Image 1 (cartoon, rainbow, N blue to C red):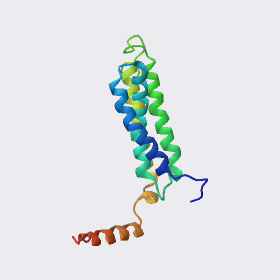
Image 2 (image 1 turned 90 degrees about the horizontal axis):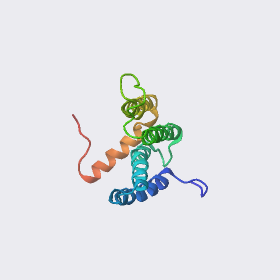
Image 3 (image 1 turned 180 degrees about the vertical axis):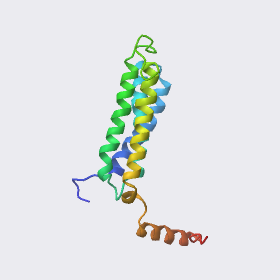
Image 4 (image 1 turned 30 degrees about the vertical axis):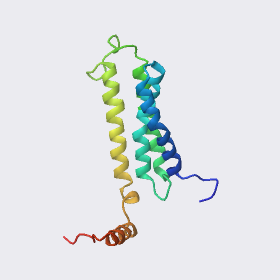
Length: 151
């Protein structure tokens, strides 16, 4: 790794390290700006954890774009909800639900679920454990004294 490239580990761990105490501080402050910061950071937290779990050799590779898209979808949904003004009772119903609930269920829940499931299926061969990975896991398990299960 050259000095020009920074691994996803350092970036995401740095962001999550700053985000954790920031979330706690925002919970303790009763101000609309603190609540907005909390909401934005809280939605980014699970995406950051997914990035850490999906990395390969310190980089995301082709999964970077979908994870950024997922973060944008969540933040757009949050922005729509925060700008509705109340519970959105005067807004039209969307697919049988009030607008606010439709945004939460359809945009912020179902769309990320479909994206995550599709990505898992499409990248299964690329991001699952290789034979070398399994051998490394077996070697470590033997060192610890618990060899691989022989069921």
